[in-house]
Image (cartoon, rainbow, N blue to C red):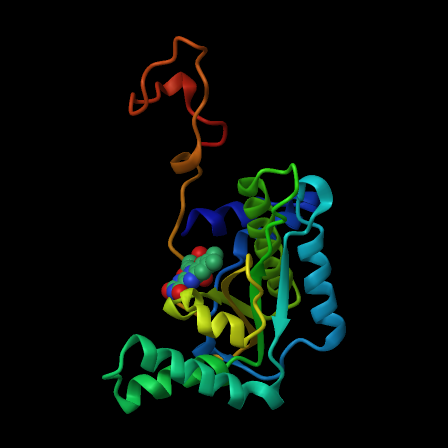
Length: 221
Ligand SMILES: Cc1cc2nc3c(=O)[nH]c(=O)nc-3n(C[C@H](O)[C@H](O)[C@H](O)COP(=O)(O)O)c2cc1C
């Protein structure tokens, strides 16, 4: 039984709140179907983004919603971008590019907008934006929807960025797809807390890579 499932079985009361975070996983657009979140739910997702830790309260990010009536135009932009990158793209390649625009029930462009003249370092602004993105994906999951963020080469294309309204100095970090789950994705890979954990041993600490002694193991392992 996966460790996360084991942990959830033993969770009670307040610990259950973690369940949303522990069970979130990305759901690819081909596994999504309508209905999309309604406007109130979308507002909740954005509010969750705005609750992310944010040094200076800059919210250095924004989203661009691509509504159904504009998806065909977006699909043409994706198709053109694919042809700029690969003039020999096949009809199948172009169809795939178009589907990235037409398939998701809800499609949001996630734009990082670092404030250049702020005293908050750029790296902290990027972290805030990433935290907001994570909150939004978790909020969508909590509402019962599937969601994923995908960038791909198209997000690095200046022409496409301008076409969708990304301003100079901003970055199109990815496209967030959200919808009802048509097909459950494959089981998530089990991740161990120890892969991201260490415990400082004082300034005479051993160099990185030194094995952690049993007495220094993280709690819960
Ligand atoms: C900004 C950003 C862009 C991403 N772009 C892609 C992408 O283009 N293609 C892809 O396969 N995964 C991409 N990912 C990763 C997926 O969104 C997803 O996190 C990954 O498949 C792991 O799945 P999980 O979220 O269920 O752990 C991106 C993630 C982020 C944060």
